[in-house]
Structures are given as C-alpha cells and as structure tokens.
Length: 115
Image (cartoon, rainbow, N blue to C red; front, side, top):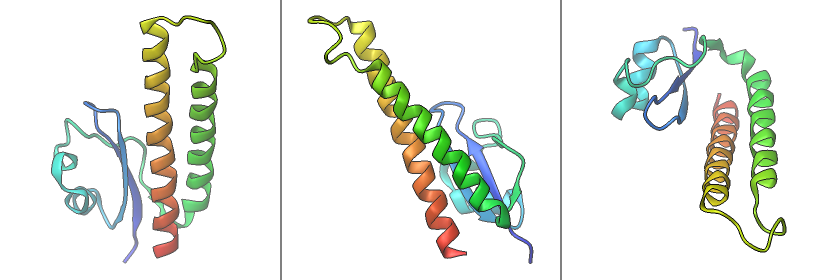
C-alpha cells in the first residue's frame, strides 16, 4: 500500500501537523482531535510521497533557521536600555514560531526514522 505524507495547518493556532497515511481521511483520523475538522485544519500542502521526506526535512530545517534568525533580530536584549511592550510581543511571537518550526522538523525526522 502506498503511503503519503500529509501536512495540515490549524487555522486557529497556525500550528502544522504531519502524518503518514494512505489517504487524507486516514491521516486526519490518525491525528485525531481538531485535525479531523476540514474547515479548521485544511491541507497545508499537497500530499508528498514518503520518499520525499529528506527534501521536506531540508525545507523544514530552512524554515527553522529563518525562524531562529527572526528571534535573534527581534531580541530586545542589548538593543536599548528600555524596550516597548510591542517589541516584547514581537520577540515572544518570534520565539513561538521558532518553537513550532523546531518541533515540526523533529517530528519529520522521527517519521523518517520510523519508515
């Protein structure tokens, strides 16, 4: 049976979830929870063959590096003696985006090791 990598995006949180399954319905059931709701969590990208995992992991690594660079750029430490609430929010948001990118890359690597 052919398996594909499905990636969904939660429209409420912006979080991505990946899973390997033979079809979209099976992928949603495997993820469970809010991921079964097609309107809340649509497909983020076209399903990819499992053999494309190394390329997808490289793309996720580039996204993680870009998110890390955004954290470094938004870091208020050392820029000014005082910082604004807006700057702190930008930094916190950048940290969260980096955390999500890092978690996705790790999950993809774990999937590639289990296939």
